[in-house]
Length: 619
Image (cartoon, rainbow, N blue to C red; front, side, top):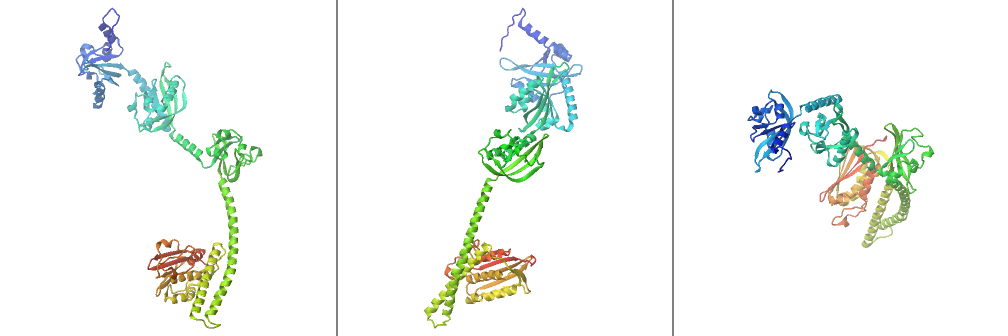
């Protein structure tokens, strides 16, 4: 505690008494139960009671209305912790009139830290309040005039405390005015990183320097930052003294976010962007432009577009500035780089207008890789054509060099087997038979390879005709009779009795069926059954060849139509083949615009299906 000694011709108690009596604020001392024990002269004048009249009465005699439970809780929380409790409220005079006042209640403690009373200091702020209410009415009028403009209207005093803000600010911030009134604006709403700068702007505005366009965020009740553009001006009383600050704010959060997004898109576009003025000066570029050309942004902005444009301003050939076009798309041209190289680009350009000024907006893609790929593709195509020519020549040679002697071998073996020049013993017959079988097998392999090669090379063409399905299948069943009879396999047909006319390549259709039936015969055991199903479904012909053979494992079904792929049963020697028959089936079906399919189960058999579109001659 401080021991105050005054160098005066009177006692210290006299000095303190005079100080209390001369105070312009009302001072009231109460006992711990809030019974009035003393009031100074200012309090007597303020409330209309003299000390003898009011001494011993409860402090509530001066209250216009009783304190709420919450108000009591807040007050005693401060007082019992040794802190003064400050608030604004109305108080009642002896004659029943009321006035608005600022109240500060402080607890008084003994040396043993026990409360022995309370000291209340009351200041009449009715006039200030009336001025404030008048100002708020004016602001409310201003707010009602701007109506749906959706702007923030806020009033701060000289210290930056919140005096008023409008309902739009309440909605935006999440705080009702009564929650934050009297608080410091900067402590409540301004992020830490912006406080120093914002306070500086506030001080300048209070000093008479209006602010226009200051942008800073405010923090809402939920902790979200809202970007606001402010227009501030000092408020003055009739004497010209600054009493506070009027701040008008626009929420520009969406605009700022949109600008940031646009900037991010601008800088991260996969292609280059150039903005060029009517004077041919480059006004702006993005990061990708710098990557493509090798220039820094500052090396391009402010320069004539000649620095990157092969034609340049001197050519007077700009399609937009010189020829009056509004824009163009897909121009295959080049761009000059810092290292002197001209890179191929694909360019779009559009005339745009910003704040009354006209510019060319150019967007371009570096197509160097595409150009290289095109050149490589041309070279690859040329090489492929040469290789294909070589392949064709090889196949032609193979056709002549292998088929001719093979036909001789097969022919002479047939003559020998008929014993035209004399009888053969059993071993000789066996040898001649093996020669014939091997020759036929090799000839079949060569024929299949040639057919597949011609299809892949596009040399095989379809010769469409209209033919009867029943007749074609009868012809095929006769051709495959030797294959099925040898193993006593039954061949059945399940198809409509009426005529079915189809439009396809008859020869290749028969080849498809022969390959499927040959494949089924090969993998169907003796006394098995092969069934041909045929039907017309909507706009296509569907044919299926089903057998009771060994079936195809699921793992092999995905590749069974690939060249040289065969099922590998335990006795592979029993199922000789080229592995090209099913591949040829798929190629021939797809040439017709159809599809192949397969369903199979090991030990139960397989069903191969194909479809051919039901075309007409006019197709």
